[in-house]
Image 1 (cartoon, rainbow, N blue to C red):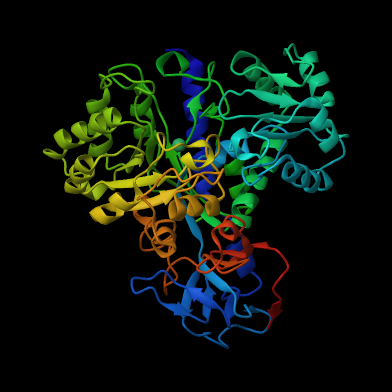
Image 2: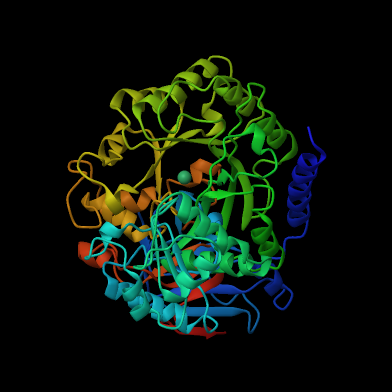
Amino acid sequence: MCRSKFEGVFRGFATFALAFALPLTPALAAQTACPNGIEIALVNGRIHTMDASNSVVSAVTMRGGKFVSVGHDAGGAAEAGCKKVINLQGRVAIPGLVDNHNHILLLGLRPGYHTPLESAASFADIRSIYAARIAGAPAGSFITTIGGFNPVQFAEKRLPTLTELDAIAPNNPVYLQVSFTGPSSTNTAGRNFFISKGVTVGADGSIAANTQTLLALNALRSVQTSADKRRSTIDAMTYAAQLGVTSNFDMGGFLIPGSPNHEDEFTFDGAASWDPYFAYEPILDLHRQGLMKVRIRVNYLTMDNALNLPILERRIDNAFREYGDHWLRTAGLGEFITNWPLFGGGTPLNYSAAVRKAAERGWIYQQHTLSTNEDNIAISAWEQLNADIPIAPLHWSIAHAVTITPQNIARLKALGAGLALHGFRYLAGTPAANGPPYRTILDSGIQVGAGSDSAQISTLNPWLMLYYMTTGRNSSGQLINAGQTLTRDEALRLYTAANGWFVKEEDKLGSIEEGKLGDVVVLSDDYFSVSDDALKKLGSVLTIVGGTITYDAGVLRVQDR
Ligand SMILES: [Zn+2]
């Protein structure tokens, strides 16, 4: 075992310990001027609390990061200058959305001025999204979109070419990459950069999937600085806040070849890959500086090859679980705990030892599955373990579950385990590749919540996920998940109140109730009554996290008192 391995592990651990010792959140910083904190009251709204009885109220007040009154403005308690009152003018507000499985930290590590295109329906949309991005970025910035979209979502059903990208962005290099490993497309300025780095780029700007796309991606990574990563992580958090996603359960990345421990684990290069010992540094820096815009829960992904699980063991022995503050906190393990039959195959030989180790130490755990074979591997091992160590108190769950059977749902329910459902089939799914079976699962009464599994193969945009959950239609409008849709109320509950359970924060996250964290989103339109097409275009006009405004579209007047 080489020395650098230990250094890598120690550096990661030390950084975590330091960050959590010095939390300086916006809420805390504000308290120095106002000894009892800033009080925020929202009045004259239609505020859907998502509490157990689905109450709708007109006013709420937040102080000290939490809701202190629901149903009326607590009124008058704050010192002069320490209260903000916001008249919602009848607008709909909901609890901050909770995404129970995404990769927002990978999104924050994207090289270039990363620009999500998940909501674009045509090249004309790309033009307007890129124009807005270019206007806010330094001249000549490299504009990138890496994963989170699929060409079939565009009316043109393909990637734009070099000529089309030159017309869209004449003064900036541009790079679009599909999914984990391409294919990709670039414009003239981007082509010149990539050719200088040894990448093969077609005259039409095309870059082939796999080897050439990885060369291109790594060329962009090679010129990325630590400051770039911090800026990009702020951009990722801002994007989530604009959409109303206030809590993100991050599920890690694949180990990039060449990282510490790479000889002991499954490795893979692509948009979902990172060095897990350095990957958390940008978010830890931002947290230390009080620059968090949304909540992040960290889950550790490890993929040991060896029977004795050296990587998992070191993570469990040296990291804290369920530790941190309300902004940044470690949760558990996932979405992998060992090397896994990603492309088919039997139970990993180290899997039962891995789940036992996790259970013995009390870790929360979420496991990725995409097939009945994988469901059976996980559930069989959990059933065996459950005879010795009950797993219900650990809040374990299966993620994605696109093909889960009624029989396997019943087995999981009997264990007290849950299902985390992700609508990534929205982008490019078909009637033969659809799911998850939302209706069957919800009606079973199992613990269930929803999320996106963005940033490579799915959209972080929750409104596209909620559209898919409630219509069963993909990005082309084709009905692919017939008979498995939910009502808007049911779907929203899965994206809010139902998700605290997955990180054992059901008493803090997901609904607007006194004592819970003050996370609320004022919507651009009425989620409950807009057309299906308008649902896809919803967003936030005001996002409040822990009683602090982290996104303000400038539509509402914030009145100081
Ligand atoms: Zn995932």
